[in-house]
Image 1: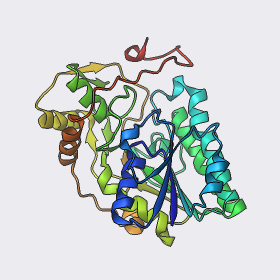
Image 2: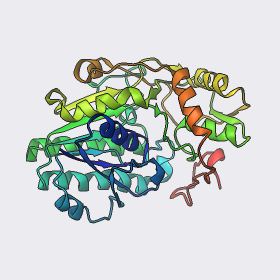
Image 3: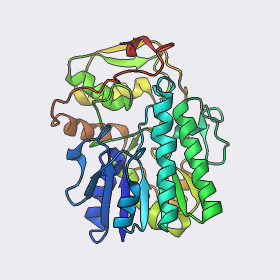
Length: 330
């Protein structure tokens, strides 16, 4: 079996590659990443790595050289809060890149495409509850782009016979996460701020709720999404089953790292409550929530303290400055 993982230097891609290599060593893995949001050091040395930007690279060469059985498409810049200010990049990075992956999967008879979408497609959901049967109503360009990708994948299935599984992970965190990006991954942002003597920022009142998901709990399910026939043509929420307020999450992190200052910033345009249903992931993918937030943060913090001092990623120039939040202004 030969598998392609896009976004192989990111959290999901690098950790899934590690999981497959450890548990299914007979599987060959090729990974693609442009290293804009992940790091080469994250990539397992047993992965054949291609440094490529999916928007303009020669994907056909990679697919011709390797007859992939399955494709995991994880590559994306997942910063929904920033996406209104980088619209063009957002749609190129998501819609255009995904359309090129879909084309190659169809041309080369890939058995299944596993695509990671996002809970951002739900928008506000139904009273904060996000269920796979709801009609998505995203409230930011990132969610719009991901929903567009979902629809195009389904069309490819209907018209060209492409098999697929769409995973909607939620607030995934853990070892190998990018903690140097100031726009995404709130738990990682807090760790970076604390390690650099800065106060940890909370937007608004901190009563927003999220179901944080430790990456290790999701890895077996991502593998099953690929190999199980029951996962074919399914859309599945995947991740933690217990929601925490941002205030609670910060309090738990401070108990792990030994304190830390907190400051409150202006409210962002974002979903207030994010409470995904998870029964479908249990029924189809045998999801097991094994790691509570404190346990996961403890493991992530131990890893974070051993990382090199990298320069924080700051977007060089926004496409739109009007309405940008004060904490992101140049």
